[in-house]
Structure formats: C-alpha cells, structure tokens
Length: 273
Length: 354
Image (spheres, rainbow over the protein chains, first blue to last red):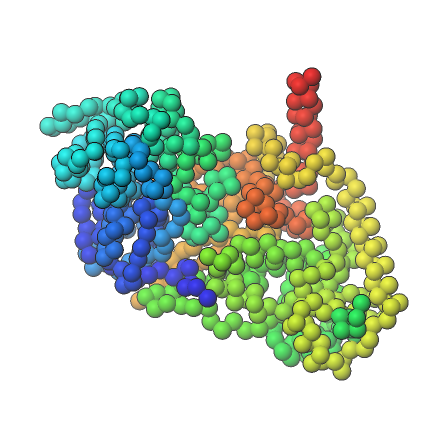
C-alpha cells in the first residue's frame, strides 16, 4: 500500500522573508526528498491547527528547500504569519497539474499577474528563465495595489528586468513615493501587440477580479480560450479529488488543476467567485 | 445452479451466531418505522428481523465513518489492525453504493488506506427486499430488489427458511466451514425465491409507474445547467443537510487538525455540499453562495459529473434522502420537473428548426 495520503511529510520553517505589509515568504525544509512541478500545489499543515493549499513560489529545481509565499487572508494564514523560524510544519503533496511548460517551447509566454498571484508566477518565471533559450520570449505584465504591495521587490525591480528575452512592465493601482512607472490596473498595461498572439500562450494569476478582466482583455486581443492558462484558487482540502470542496463543474481543481485553460472551465457558473 | 452456490437454513439465529463467532456482526433493528444497524448479541432473546428494505442509515458509515483519525504527527500513523466485521441485511442498493464509493476511495494513485482496510475485511451478507418503501425507486435507476453480485453471502427468505447464496471465496469458505448448519436447496424453493423477487420487482414498478423519463436521467440533468428548477426547489429546502448525510454515495468530507499537549492529529469528518461555507476560501470568495446553485451542483455531481469521471451514476434510487429530508425537496420530483422542462425546450428547438 502507498503512503497514507493524509500524512504530512515533516519539515520546518528555516527562514521568513517580509515581502509586503500583508505577505511573507516562508522557506521550508523537509525531512524527505520532495519534488514538484511548477504550478502544482501543496497542503501546508501547521500541526494541531490545520492546513491550507499553496503553490510554492520557488523553482522546482531547488530540491533542498521550498519557498511558499503567503498572504494573511484567513485563520491559518494569520497563524502562519505569527510563526517564527524553527516552527515545525508538515507538507502533503505535490498535488494537481501545473503549467505544461513543454507545450510552451518555441512560444512567447505572456504572463499577467497581480498581488499575491505573483507567488506561483515566480516559480514559473524562474523555471522558464532556467531554460530561456527554449522560449521565444517571456513577456510579463504585473500589477499591485501600491509599490509597497509588490512582493519580490529586490529581484522584480532589478535583476529580473535585465534577463535576456524577458520583457517586463509593472503597474500599481495607486502610486506613492518614488514610483515613476504606470498607474492603473494591470489591464491598462496590456496591449494587443505585446506578443505575436498566433505564437503565444498567456498565463494569468492574481485576485479573482483581476483574473476575470485580464482574461476578457486577452480574449478581446484575439487569444483563444485554449491559449489562456489560469491558476485557480478554490477550497482544496484533501488534495486528491475526493472531499469535493474545490469542484468547478466536473473538475476537481486539486486534481485536474489548479492550472486550467480558460476553455476548460469557461462554461461553468461563478468561476471567478 | 450448482449445489455449491446455494444452501438452505431453516432459521436465521444459528447462521448469525456462526458469523458472530468469527467477527463483529451488525444487524438491522427496527426503530420506529425505520431500520438502523446495531451490534449483534448472540445471547439476546429477541429474534433478528429479516429487514424488508434497506436501513435508513447508509452503509458508508462502516467503510468511511462519520469521524475518523486520518493522520498523527510527527510520528506517522497507519491504519491499525481493523477488526474483521460483518454486516447483515444489506440490499442491492447498498452494494451498488459500495461500488460507487470504491471508485473514489480505491483509486490506484490516491488510495484511502482506511477505507481500503475496512473494505477488504468487511464480510457482506446481503438480503432480498420485499414490500418496498414508498420512497424506494431503485428500479428507475437500473437497480433491483435483490442482489446478484457484490456480496459474500446473500440471504433470501422462502417458505421453508432462508436460501443462502455464495457470492465470493470468503462466502464459500464460510459455508464450507459451517456446512453442518446447512441443508441443500431444492428447485422448488429456488423457484419460490424467484417468484418472490419478481413480485417485489413488480411492486416497485407499480409504485414508481409515474416516474418516467423521456431521456436518460444523466442527459436530463446535464441539460439543466441554466434551469430555474433548482432555485424554485431551494425555496423548500431548510438546509438541514440530511439528504447528503444519509446518502450512501455522498462522500464529501473535511479535514481538520487537533492537538493535545504534543499530540497532533488530523481528523476526517463527513461534510455536505449543501452547507453555505462548503466551497468558501480564505478571504470569503465562494462560487456557490446561493442555495439553488448548491442544489444544482449536488444534482449535477450525482447524475452527470460522476458518470463522466467514473462511468457510473452516483444515485442508486434508495430514497433515503426522501425519507430524511426536513424540507420538501424530493429528488424524484426534481428529476420529473427537469424532465418536463427539457420537453418544453425540445419543442422550442424543434420549432426553431422548422
């Protein structure tokens, strides 16, 4: 018999990085070898308190540790934000289907992200950059509420922008301080000629409202519903397609997703809620 | 039919005593107008009833208990040596519900170790139905008032006693071990059994004569994505969730963590898709805030999504939800309304085509 699928792998938090006023990254080291694919998610257990689903924000090629970026949004995330280095945690997973990177080869990868949605995108971005020669370009259009709300500021504002074949534009809903970039929601920095749509795929991840309007914008530009990859956040509890909480229509987000093409889920009701 | 396959016994008690000698045995016991399962006590004077229909509680509670330990940490926890147990009086609908749960919990890649352990060790003694309840509608969903597979032993009441049919190697081993209890069945008794079965089947068909559909049920439900029926029906739903609790195929659960000193455990407990916060995520987003949407999802899952994924429908027509419902949502009436609605749509489509 396989390992008990409800049993987490033991691990601990070795470092905590303050990313924004409401978001922290937790560096987790596990007692067992752990492999995942970018876009897959894990269930992070805070022993005795509960668990919640997160997509790691680090590259799968880093097999020694895993980073998980978490916004304070509910009970478990608030408790995690109060944790200190050395806190014992458990991990179940990895679960679901991630980004089909091999299908992106030779194409322009158009990434639209916002807020804490940059967490799964960071993992994808790092993965793409590791083999950047395989892609025509990686075009990023990111947004945040204010400059302070950006996560991964150190790399996002500097080194990532200088990578060959990477084209990056950032925006904020409200500017402050020394921000000299675009002001407006992320759809205001999307342009039909950002990529050659016939040779591109789009990836969207962020708050539901942003995902909805970014997807509609991409469709307006001429993207096919099957060219748009969405990372869906639903109530993934068991992670293995049994408990039912995360269902969108016939799909278990935990097993058939969390990455879906818009084409797969567009006909189901309330997908953005 | 070979003699190896059926045997006869004049009374139930020696048979049940023999089973109880081997393992924990659960038998149906009448409480009010319904049956529930109780542990069998061989010393009791009260004779065990041969239940005419299914119990009101679902068989899933034996395989997937209402609440169970799922994990303990930091030290791993594997399913303890689950004690052998037997359940007597399961009906064909119950066996079909087990077949459905097997699809979910014994999936190769994601086997639920606790379910699998109980499933392997469970000794299934089914029995034929007679005098079906008003809520029974298994015949409409390809069910029958008697089982033909999925049991270790099946018991049929006939005029001179009980015919026991062997359905598995485990069942065969049992009958051989206790051969002293049994005599041979006769052709005339087997004919009596078949007559009883046919009569019960006929009665079911009569009871459900009104429940006729113009298309396969899955097609009717598949087409109900935009139907108003769910919102209308939701007005009579009091959100008691009883429909999903007593449903032998509903298998939603939630995991929660608990602690005591340095003991940490993850628990698994039944949940219901009819509950408001069921699909809610941190921050409050919820794709099924509206009760009618939750009702729709329940029907779509049962009749369409599950079929799509596992090749089998998730409703067996046992009617437990009809009996348990504190509001007025009746699964049969909802299906009938959807059927009527689809008829109307078809006409419109046909008219448009002309």
